[in-house]
Amino acid sequence: MVHEEIISYIESNIKPRSELLAEMEMYAEENNVPIMELVGIEALLQLLRIQQPKNILEVGTAIGYSALRMAEILPQTKIVTIERDEERYQKAESYLSQSHHRDQVVTLFGDALELEKTVEKEGPFDAIFIDAAKGQYQKFFDLYSPMLTEHGVIYSDNVLFKGLVAQEEVEQKRMRQMVKKLQNYNRWLMEHEDYDTAILPVGDGIAISRKRGGSK
Ligand code: SAH
Ligand code: MG
Image (tube, rainbow, N blue to C red):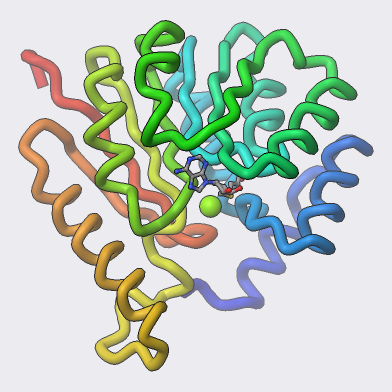
């Protein structure tokens, strides 16, 4: 992946976050919550500033860090976010309540693969952000992409999985399966007829898939 030195250099130039966000970053670090990497989230936020989605679906809230950051930069935008881990869901609730953006975010507790009906009522979405169980990306994509508006964008995080997807041999068996699934997802996504996709090697790898409309 990108050289550590370069990442540190970019990070050193990123504006400091609010006290609440800094606290969330620290909590994530201490409790091994895989929130987006700083350079990765900054890149995603910039893409969202350009895209200006009015309604975003996020699969994988964790403690609400990315949801809050998206809410902050797009104050008119609604964010619907799903988390299946109860402790993290509660933590997200608590952090969001301490922010000025509670009303912008709809938090849903449960497995994203089972919440289709509930989510549908909140849609359609101009952007979908997939940042949950890596082995199930294609399922999330298939389930929620019908709720995307014309020329909507699907952002998938962690598609390079620390660079492992580019390695020929992966030692650990469990890892190997995960890597295979992500490789398959990436290939499937790049070949998808209805989307134009680019993979950016920023953070842990972000795939950006824009839906082709009738006019392309
Ligand atoms: N987007 C967050 C980080 C999400 S980490 C941020 O950057 O701040 C991924 C989260 O997805 C984990 O908390 C995990 O519990 C959740 N998750 C994984 N599979 C899920 C599923 N099928 N349904 C709902 N949540 C899921
Ligand atoms: Mg992620």
